[in-house]
Every structure is written in C-alpha cells, then in structure tokens.
Amino acid sequence: MSASTNRRVFLKSSAAFLGSCALAACNNKRTSNNVSEMERHYKISLAQWSLHKALKAGELDNLDFPRIAREDFGFDAIEWSGQFLNVEHARLGAQPKGQAYLTETKRVTDDHGLTNLLIMCDHVGNLGDPDNTLRSNAVEGHYAWVEAAKSLGCHSIRVNAASDPSLSSEEQKKLCIDGLGRLCTFAQTHGLNVIVENHGGLSSNGAWLASVISGVGQDNCGTLPDFGNFYVAKNRGNSERYALAKEPYENDPVYREDDIGLEYDRYQGVTDLMPFAKGVSAKSHDFDAEGNEVNTDYHRMMKIVVDSGYTGYIGIEYEGRTTPEMEGIRLTKTLIERTLASLHQST
Image: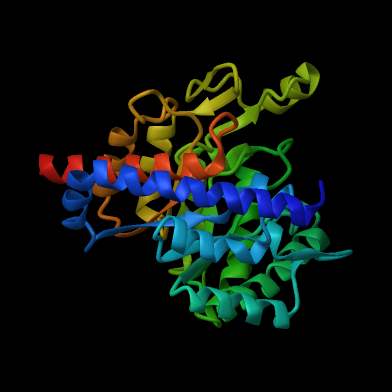
C-alpha cells in the first residue's frame, strides 16, 4: 500500500473516531465543567510523538499534525518532534529542514490557531561527550534547532543530557554541565529555553539530572519531567547488552528492576525535576477498563505537579503498543482532565 493510500485510510478512520469522541464528550460533560475551573493554571497540549507510528508509516504527513491536534481533539498548543522536521548532516547530526519548510509549518499552525511550544531534539550528538571536538559539534548542532524553534514561536527546545556511561556519574555531570551551559548561553541570545528530559542513562536519575541543571545555573536552563522515562537501562531482549547497560547502576538501592529494566522511582524523579520544570510530559502506555494508566498513578503524579507550584501546559505523549494512537491520545486527555478535576475538588 502506498503512502498516499495509507494516509487516506488513516484520515477516514480518524473521521469515524472523531464521531465517537463527540459522544464521549457528552458523557464527560461534568468532568469538563470541573476542569474549566483549573484552566487558569493548566492547559493540555499534544506531543507529536503520540502519532509517531502513523507518521512513520506514511499514514500521516507531518503537516497533518496541527489539523488533527486542533480539529480532532481541540488542543490549542503542540510540541514538535525534530525527527519529523530534520535532514542529516555529516558533522552536526540531525538538522532542521530549510527555512521555507519551517515557514510553511508556521503558516499551517497559525491557520489552525495553534501555539508551538517546543521542538524535541534527538540525534544531534551528546552534549556531554568526553571528546572535546564531538561535544562542541553537539553544542553547535543544536544552534539551528534553537533558531528553528524561534521561527516557529516556541519557548524551548528539548535536549538530552547524555555522556559516556562508562564514566563516573560526577565525570558525566561535569561534561553535561559544560555542553549544556554553552548551548544555554547561545539560546539566551534568542530568548529561548533549553530544557532537558529524563531520557535514559543517568538523565533518568532525577537527583542527578537536577544537579546538572543546578550546575548550569542559567535561568533558561530547565527540565521537561516525563512521567515514564525513568529507566536508566532497558532490557530489549539482548541479555548481554542489557547486563552491560545496567552494570553502572545495579548496586545502587535507588533503582528497582522489573521486566522492562532498571528504574529510578518515577514519583521521586518527577519530584526531583519539578523545581526546574518549564513543561511537563504526561507519558502514557496502557489503560485499564476504567481509563486509568496502568503504569503510572496519575492522581499521585499530577498532585506532585500541582504541589510543586508549576503552572502551564501538560503535554500528552502517548506511546502505547496495544491501543491505537488516536484512542490513546483521547484516553490520556480524558484521564488528565478527570485527575485535575479531582484534585480541584480535594483542595
């Protein structure tokens, strides 16, 4: 099946899905009324990665994303994944497409009345690379993403604090502070924030990542706490590779091991990162019959967010394998709204 055929099939199914959402909205009228009282402090946005399967399969074009976010779900803000906006550069890694494409992207989002919040940047090199040249390349490689985010009207780029896992945690921290700090200095001249997500390796240790942000010590350096990305090592089926990945961490009592891998406590991790948060990523995977996320206690997690004093957007990032993406987004949105209403009632 061609990409254009895949796209037609997806758009037809999404239209049917939209009708089911309208019925669900009627059934959840009471929840929506309660949530409206929280809207002064919290709004919900959509991360593009929530649709990554459809995008990679050619069922959606990159520029379909703003329309779906607005028309199918009613979002007024979105978060872009750089993986769908990039071209490869031999020295600098993934780089944004040309200005003409960015201008068109901005036009489409404006036409749908959307605010672009941030771009998630991946595959641009390690900001904590122990090789001075490669670390400098990684810093420079993010410059174009800062400029792209500025042209789209974003407030931030999301980056990764990654180094060489064979080094000590202190050595990795020192290197990440250097690379991240230099990037933040550049971003400051464009009025942009640089925010770091817990995203594997030591960055999934909340206390460590908080110490990196504190070490940078710049106002435009912050975090994007993700509810689910606290695995410092994941078991992807290769036992030898997994054993090597978890070796630096497995004797530390702050981690627990399950079928997925070695995890830092996610509630403690979000608590660690919220003082620096300039966004929040509400990760979801699987739901029970009552619409609760089975891996994360959303009431407990959202209470941490609210109690931290954070106000702003909470970005949905659905990443499940069993529930279709459109339905997973809807379930996550409904769960956040219901949870905020419950927290409001309890205050």
